[in-house]
Image (cartoon, rainbow, N blue to C red; front, side, top):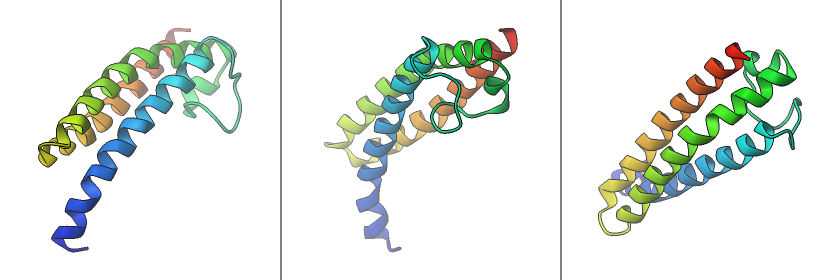
Length: 113
């Protein structure tokens, strides 16, 4: 992959990661309020959240806020990237940091449930 190919992929990554964060919000809200029960397909699939129904709901509910904040940051960076492409790196960083924050919050809540 050349320099031009990497530069062309950056906007795509910024928007895809923003969309993935939005998907995490939607799934976490639905699982947190019981619309998506524990299952083997959809949701945050880590052992701490799969221990019980209460851990599943608490973990997902705790992930909504960090995912929403990260999604807003990623969306802002992606929009700014339309004018200053280097800003797409901010969307990628917001995704990485946001996902870490979501998982940390989910594990803490699930362990407390």
